[in-house]
Amino acid sequence: MENNALKELIANVEKVIIGKTETIKLLIVGLLTNGHILVEDVPGVGKTTLSLALAKSIGGDFKRIQFTPDLLPSDVTGGFVYSPKTGEFDFRKGPVFTNILLADEINRTTPRTQSALLECMQEYRVTQDGKTFVLSQPFMVIATQNPIEYQGTYSLPEAQIDRFLMKIDMGYPSFEEEVRVVTGQKIRHPIEDLKSVIRIEEVLSLQEKVKNIEVSSHILEYITRLVTATRANKEDIKLGASPRASIALMKASSAWALLEGRDYCIPDDVVRMAPGILKHRVIMQPKAMVAGRTADLIVSELLQNTAIS
Image (tube, rainbow, N blue to C red; front, side, top):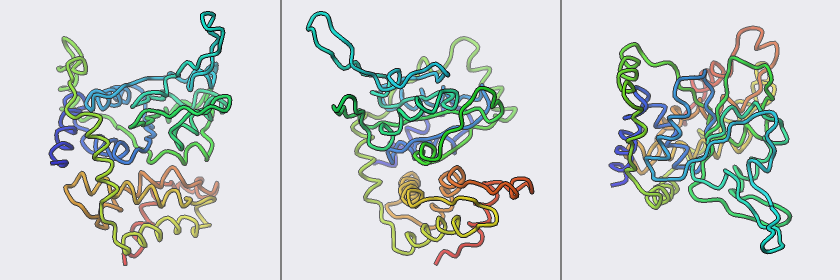
């Protein structure tokens, strides 16, 4: 039954996002694992629409923050505001109190404001003046970055970027797909008519299903070998992936197995998830970058050279 619900969810988002089935499935992997997704691509390829379509499809709340240099941490998390009626300070919730949060152009705000998301993304809560406020469930951050324009941006620190389950891109549509996109928006945007196909309660149930996916000791060892291999390659990699990457790869592989209609993981699940999980978690050596070596290439070689059992 859960596989039918997931197929219906994918098909519903595809009504708006044409020709990007794999990208949609990767986003749903983030949803199923209660993880966060970093989308790095040029403007105009549908990053915002994809986020909104997912939120509408699950009947969840959606908030968007346009990150700018003058944005304050309280603009993200909220804060205490004085109430003349009560004579006390009441907590006014910020946009993080939602199900799907779009952090648009996250690298355009200062590190101080970026750090306001750290507790939200890791602990799923906000702490203000010693008081803790729990976020809604599910809670998922979809952050976007423009990989071309770096003027006026602040690179995400490693502690922040490591909290993203995976990094994905949208890519341009094919000629035929772009014709369909243009035709579909001649009168009105299809996102306006998109309805929910599953409920929040079903999403939470699916998240529990992911936790119960069988992951054998051989698969766990394979995942660990892949991640530790990033730390052994000192020639190309300055800093390898942490144990958090191993956990993320296990969870993502379990979610992919559920999407494929299985209650157990196979090595192909790990291979499919590894690039998105690992490529943003390794820091390349400068000499390797000069030589044209990229994180994508390194991860691809690791997958080829690491034994499954």
